Length: 270
Image (cartoon, rainbow, N blue to C red; front, top):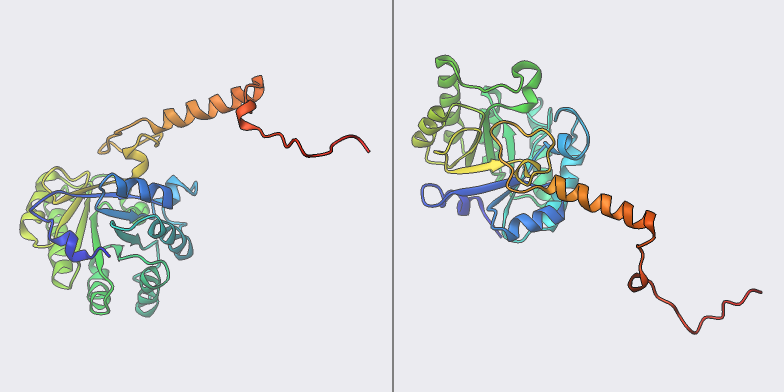
């Protein structure tokens, strides 16, 4: 079974690779490709469930998708993203929701969009044996307050991110996602912390990188500016589906090799 210590030991030694996954098939393919960490992101709301933001995603939906990813993996570390208002409101409920992801869905850890309000919670979860991946910078659950713009661009904002990163390390977070922040800020945080940093739109100096899998494989229609498509799955999907429709309409599918005739059946009209 993979552990957070396995990931921590990679920091400074070899780059950590992380991708989102929302189903068993994608999880198995990503693991076979060598991905170290599979994040069951609340981005499932945008990429799979058709929402405009991550905010409508529920704990039950995250538990279901996390369990599917776990069933598709053997070696990758599976991290469950905690959805909007599942943590930080009531401590006992926060612990219960996080615990479900490990106890019921089989995740190895949880990720929490972090701030001053999650420091004590991170410490309590860590004490209880629930590994926490912190997340600073652009936090999509705060879209109505922050938007989707780059964070940490002023001295004050950069210092706050730096201080919060250290605070979450001090209370037991095992790693830190830095999203859409200046590369020099991400480098400074990475150099300061002993836990691994994983960047997304945060430059090349983090200990690892993460992308939404739809962006990485070329399935997204409008990927963010910091993403890169390493394939054209959207084009391949479109071509395959068009080919199917054309084949049914012109009668070439199903062909003889797709059918079976049972010679022993008596099918004469009654």
